[in-house]
Image (cartoon, rainbow, N blue to C red; front, side, top):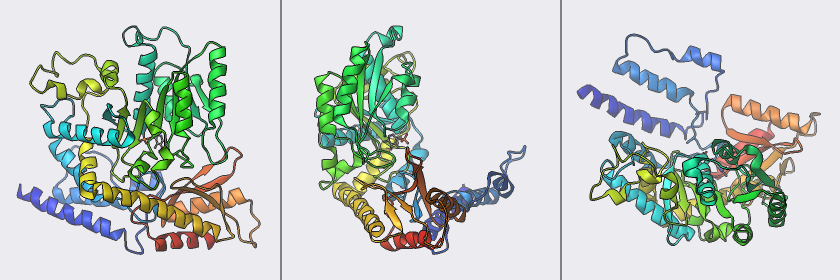
Length: 464
Ligand SMILES: *Cc1c(COP(=O)(O)O)cnc(C)c1O
């Protein structure tokens, strides 16, 4: 045990050092290595003989050295970033206690915590008598919502399978690709995802939605779901939920809101107007591992109507796992598609307890302030071009080559991005528009990024 204690003490030092190194000037976001070179740097093979503690420590050092530092202030590449300390601790305790959310018996505290978080989130959303379940990621959450909607419109499906294939759903042309994947899994066919045109800043156009619904019905299709996006993945756009909700209600179609990215704006009184109309939704997905900064994944699927999750997801298990005990009604298992399910609620609870509603509101507001700083910087520099005015934290822009450089603007930006990723000082993603234009996508949700980091980032780009 002493060796383990010593090892863990050292590990704590390694962790703290790692986090402190993020703030040193010369610490890169990534030590870029080609896949072939990485194989040389770290001995990946598993041998007949095991290793001792000092070698174990070396493995950790190697892993940390060549992994991307998503907690680094110059990392803004994904929709998750930064480190939320209490949530990080929650992840450790989750591994330490290693249990499943299937039954109250095996996870008593976590079961009560997950209920608390579900009630809290439903209260914020406005689902007065709602229910919910944590799922492994936003894609899975969208899939689960489609499953609920499918079984509502085709109740016989759960037992006898799909009896006809006329179901269609509607999303904007900016929606996440998980919807098409979900149609594939559900046996409904990816062709039955009808994409609605979006406006110049990426919001679904409600009139187009209504037209497409009517057109689909006219050819015998059965609309079963309208999914609006609250915070699109590329542009951070918010579909007009209230108008879309009215259309869905008028046509009696399940209304789902994909708030994987943007759902957290509900925590801010200043910005929650972006989701006006959310209470009209039947279901919603909300990733706490994005704007709320919790390590992924920590995704909530909320549903306005109590009973739907059980009706759809329950089945089997009574013979060995769900026993008739005092607390059986608290078992989450029958509400979930999973058997073993992590206590993801713990890290969310730790983070929210630690920060409080006030702390979270401040955090979300500070993300928006950072995005505004980025926008202002771009607007004030003639060599930076804003692609579209952002609604939230995704700032899309490109760099115009300086006058001496005779290079196509797309080639220039592509070259810049590749160089940046290889040098590893900053990591910021890029995307392409339908017309082939390539642009940077700055995500302003890293709490450790200061104005000075942003200035350094732009100076780096402009000096190329
Ligand atoms: C990130 C994202 C998803 C997918 O969420 P994961 O947790 O990565 O599976 C779905 N929808 C939107 C809008 C997203 O931004």
